[in-house]
Amino acid sequence: MKKILALLLTSFYMCASGAETILFVGNSYLYYNDSVHNHVEDLLREHYKDESIHTELIAIGGSRLNYHSIDQILNYEIFGLDKPVNRVIFQGGSSEVKTPRTRKILAMTSRQYSQKAQSLGIETYLYMTHPYQKSDPRYEHNLIEKIKLAYYQAGEQSNSTVIPVGIAFDIAYKTKPSITLHLPDGTHPNMLGTYLASSTVFASLTGTSPQGLAYDYMGRVNQNEKAFLQKVAWLAYLQNEKNLSED
Image (cartoon, rainbow, N blue to C red; front, side, top):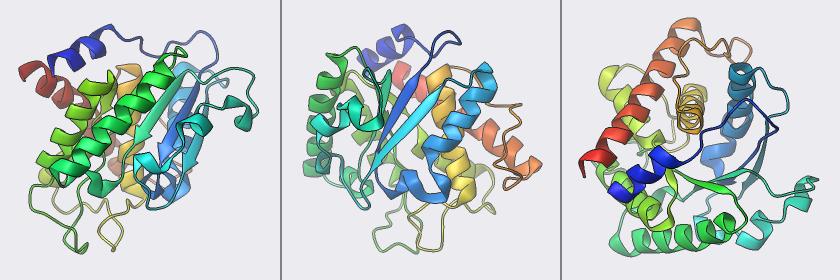
């Protein structure tokens, strides 16, 4: 785990100079509610005052990470680009965290895919998924511990920065039990869940708090909700760094 911390401390955060392209790879956890990648793009553009920041998405509904082709992921021409993306964010399937076998597959896939991306100079990240709610039959009490184990192992083995979305959901529900971040199915995020996830990605990409950003998805997230979710995203980022430094 300390290896991951060293990576976090030495990797380059996004800066205001030069166009950045960020590719998200995952499943419906990303594309619900107008997609995490779109919200992250708007947050970053506001923060850096830079309209050249660009995001892309490759998503397969219900997929695990190894359902994706790394060769397709790295083929920047399919996005109309003339060079590789700057950063890629890999998201595994939500059930990949549940058993030692599936965690091993997630770590192995993360390592193989990240090494190929890193060989092209691409910064790699792992998007930590959120736990289920009780309405999903896959619900487990305290599943967040398996989620953290899975993504910290995969992050260490792949030299990738872990984005603590799952930790953010856990903090939000514990801090404000009345909040709803999931749809009734207990697995997919609602708009507030997607906004929290996007704010957590923003914090991990920039190393700065999203607190104070005006972006509210055209008023779909009210001011009180926005302030709370931005605060939680930053707390999750700080907790993630603490977890890595203590292990």
